Length: 490
Image 1 (spheres, rainbow, N blue to C red):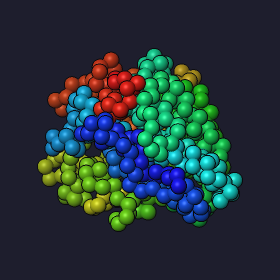
Image 2 (tube, rainbow, N blue to C red; image 1 turned 180 degrees about the horizontal axis):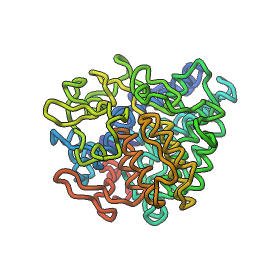
Image 3 (tube, rainbow, N blue to C red; image 1 turned 180 degrees about the vertical axis):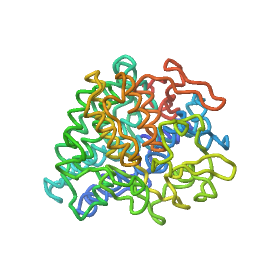
Image 4 (spheres, rainbow, N blue to C red; image 1 turned 60 degrees about the vertical axis):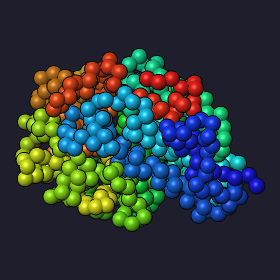
């Protein structure tokens, strides 16, 4: 009987290649079940859908490391322990080794997740999945798989490819794999351009928007936060278009889920809205109308795994038992004079007895099971604000109102007006500053720098990394290069 290899993929093989010869490799499944069994019941099919999110939630991906790497490679954190295992080379910008753990493992986990999506999509078609769960549910599940795949490809672009602004997407992107790997196969596949990968991301998200459910129900808020629905796909498209500097398109998407005036909410589907108190987003039960997509954890069966957890990296012993890997940079955003002492977000800064400051946004104790935020509604509001200003080159009144919505909910004493900004550049600077404050420790700082073609700023004794530098982006995984002879390095 033909087998479907559920936990086997190209990337699993590629990871092994770092320490093994090509001739000795073959994709050996950890778990394999027959085609008939895999798609025999609604519960088994739903279990496969949940496994896609489980793979995305891996501590080496969105469960921790992806978010952490995109924070520490920028300028808001200072490394304290010089441990390569926990990202010292990412922090200091010495990612020239294709075989380093961070380069290989994140690439591997992202492509592993992509392959799970592809295997599921192929399997539903080949094994009559729609006849088991019904056509509508089957289409919903396929849309979830494509949404997860889109997030994976977008995320890989932020580390392993030049920003879209460099050559309008013409630079080498990623190998686009859309067919599931269920056994020994031909792995050679050239890198598509950055623009082509972004187009695949948008194709998947457009399909997801059309076919995902509007909501999982008013009594299923936890599911609305931890699984993709229509508004999830729309929200993520605002991030994608901002990364491509396609501001008119970002506005179009945001307008689908942001009302024209305050209080800004999504009128259809899951009713996104800001929390009145931002601290509600980062404490149990982590389920709010602001949380567009989060990676959930518990203290037993679902944990990020050792040395992956957000609280472990950013916390310190006196706060939550964290390891104190990264303190906050005293010359970073916490030094900004506009971030006032009355701002509720100042409560996310913990001062240790040493005088060093640490991020307390993830306060749970070991095993550090704070939900990992993939996207929040405040980002959509600031995405729209920035896109409005850049597309009109004006001090746009709605953009100021959106900026106020994010600032005022944490600092009622600060209200901007159009007269607050002498130039368009001043308003844009205020929006970027707000992003740095709002999303500190959420993995958006480095992607923001890259999409704008800005240098990665200096920090401590680490020099700035210019836009043109080789180490502005990561090298391609050595495992990929070993088995995929058509893939070229950065």
